[in-house]
Image 1 (cartoon, rainbow, N blue to C red):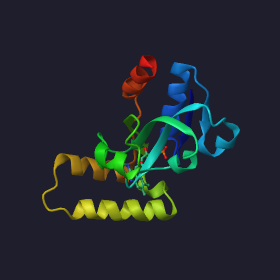
Image 2 (image 1 turned 45 degrees about the vertical axis):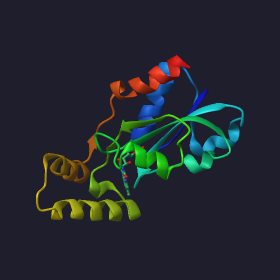
Image 3 (image 1 turned 90 degrees about the vertical axis):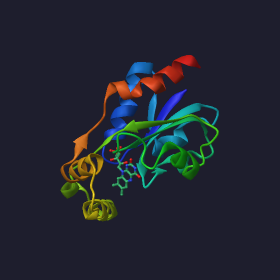
Image 4 (image 1 turned 90 degrees about the horizontal axis):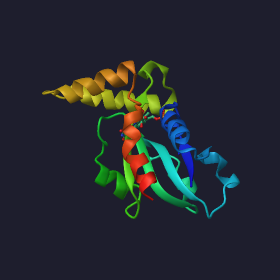
Length: 161
Ligand SMILES: Cc1cc2nc3c(=O)[nH]c(=O)nc-3n(C[C@H](O)[C@H](O)[C@H](O)COP(=O)(O)O)c2cc1C
């Protein structure tokens, strides 16, 4: 088995490298996929954009046996069921990993526009709960939610195979 990942700002890469260190599996970026045999089992890690796991489509012809999605929220947002359906991965294990984000001012292009709009929507909510307030601060100021312990379910699954 090998690890393949797609990461834009580095948080998912941190998880991929951490997982490689703990399992001694080789790790590749999704755009290096042509170097990999189609018979190889793959655990894929990708960052999530509006519930879509980025980079996963590049691996449609490969043997992806488990998928991890990294996002900003504490738990999958949208929820795991929606992520699984949106990415058509009903037949394999899905693990959500809390990643992180750069401060909004450091983002560029469409990503910046989309997240700015998202923050505006959150701010316009009348009765903002603690989670919403936290999400606004995290997106505006950036944060790093990458923790070794978040990989535990993934490691347990790998070890049980
Ligand atoms: C345009 C945009 C859309 C996003 N949509 C989601 C989302 O639907 N769910 C989520 O949890 N995180 C979402 N995020 C946050 C990223 O998935 C998160 O910051 C991720 O950890 C970044 O990983 P990377 O550093 O490997 O690129 C979004 C970020 C951007 C810029």
